[in-house]
Length: 366
Image (cartoon, rainbow, N blue to C red; front, side, top):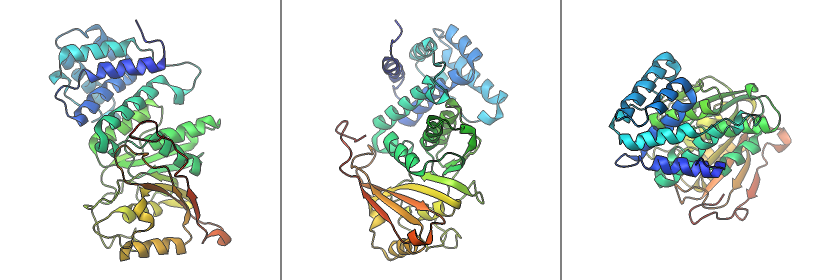
């Protein structure tokens, strides 16, 4: 019997997917399951052939052949799928194929941002992040945090950029924000970068499933190889990894306009990279560790003072605790604005929102 509600459907899909877990690493497991979801979306005719042979003992080999054929036919999809289905438990893989085959993903009249396939993909991303704990934070930012950034910046047209885009949540929420206001998603152009190959694949798939052009997503270390150098952005949104000690520091980098970040912490390297991007009138919203507001190292304190003196810091928000399952570190949100009016340039709005959340379980607030 097919699930009768979206909630039941997602739970059924997750239960079927979990059967594949076995000896797979968390990263491999994500790749395998999300790759299947994406294959159903991108290649309907090939998917039907797989569903017809789901009980075959060679279903994994058939899936590998199908993904190879898709990538050959569409060069833009090169590298998007893992090649490991032949090595999985064939019976359980076939069961997942059959469950996915029963699902009618599209919901006519609701608009692409309400497409059920996209919701299932995001549901899986959230569950993977929860199951991986700390490592899950490397690719997934809680929806409430993303929504806060998007609604503060209000991106309705122009270039939107995320230098550490994870699975692409900032872009999906931006598209939804535009659609909810009867805007034209085509007025927004997406630019992003991600250093982890598996995560980059997830982002490419996530955007494609939501009908968002993903050609602006580059792969590589943002500090070493800025894939969008020289491109001015209207909106920058980011949740960079906190307090990274081992990063590619170059003291001669022209992005360090406000001071060279310390070798042992990349927080202000991320901030200055982000501030190198906005076009005239551009804005940026960045999630940072709370310590970024008060760190007393000479380098960071000096950079922070120069940012304020330059009139770039518009607002600092202290959100509720425990928003992230991946870390217990308290976080804050920096909002930057280029070309502020002179009378407001040195004013910084502080928002204490720590009491505005409530726990949805023992691990996180909404």
